[in-house]
Length: 290
Length: 301
Image (cartoon, rainbow over all chains, first blue to last red; front, side, top):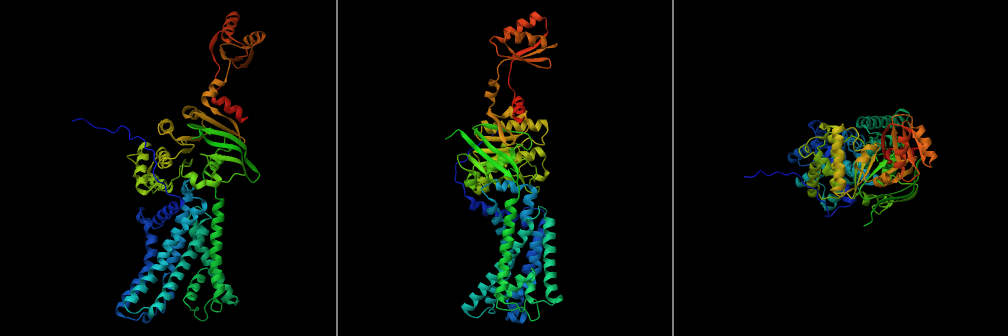
């Protein structure tokens, strides 16, 4: 019997099909979702994203469980899906401040940004792919539980009345969930674009949100200025927008209670655009290897 | 297909008032080309322009026949790039990273997986391909960078200081690998380096940048053939021999105990006769060869 050995594997040229930049963006988004969720990484890296996802889904599961025994959702103290976001504010905050920066900061710190930009990706398509990845996870948190509840309530005969009512509720859930996901994505990207250190980005987002909340509350409640100054409150603004999408004003006496709906939407859209433009501006100027 | 891989005509690039490239002209042909230059000469900036990472401010640049400013994403599908830095994500397995980059360059997932594995075998990391990059040595990381640049089968490979941080043995291995990629794999290579010796060892051609312009470009073969005359090394003061040569119409430049002689036919016979007549001790008489170092120093001044 002769001994067989591979001495050289040789080099094979590749003449097959190649996908374009669109597929590269999708691939980068997929890879980024894996990274921020800690997949293929140590267990320690999975802790924060797992906590954020659990916090966002557990209330929905509890409500659905209770609804199985108490057939009317309004008896749970959950008047609409808008109320649900009050339960998951912490999860969104946790993810946007402490998990999402991983999506971009590490690329700059590890030099991967240079490799990405040496691929068919451009700075813009890179940023869009990253934003899509963060928004996809945040969207899972903001859309998943309310949609799950809508389906469960409908099956338990506790959902909206009629087809039109059901579709309207679905539309409001989609709009609210998307608005929250896009806002927190844009905010996280803008702050993360300032640094290659994930911890600094986390501190920046955390402090920025607390500061904006303090400023908004201070101007309206401390200085007794008009409620519109509460638009500075980046924590309260997106959730107030959600209440307006569901046709509900904030409870009487609360910040933004006296502000019309359109300035709230305009401010929210303006902030998303401003955060996005800032992140883009930063990435156009970042020097990479090469 | 054209033999010109990169063509630059009057390429300019500035950062504020710092004019890094000031009308750079060169043509890079097939094979392995060394991009040499002192720090600040504009090597990295030129690499960035080739990749289309930065827009140029003037001139024309064609890489593989297309303008990087206009067709950057399409062009980069055909380029492989190994950066200078050693940082790569430490918690990612080498095979995953190489496959990911290959997919970004347009390869379908299954093909990317196969080629990533193959590329890592080619660079000598076949057995290590499932190790996290953070556990690898500098030499292994350099090989991972080479593998990720190779896996998608580029037409042109851009290597930025590929031997930086390697010990002599690893350096020899890396240079042999580069030579193999350029010759056996048939991939054209632009190798940025500040080490003349490694460029001389592996490159077919050289482009020397100095002060944002091309100080010299050409093949190393032409470089060696360009010089004329002889180099004479004596064991004593060469001034008497220089004076005797000049008296017979030759040009003689003294450099320590050596003489560079040119300008006459049959110079070797003349030198031999004069050395014998003057009773001098001759240590070496050889045809003069211009070294890359000579050209580099001249171009840098």
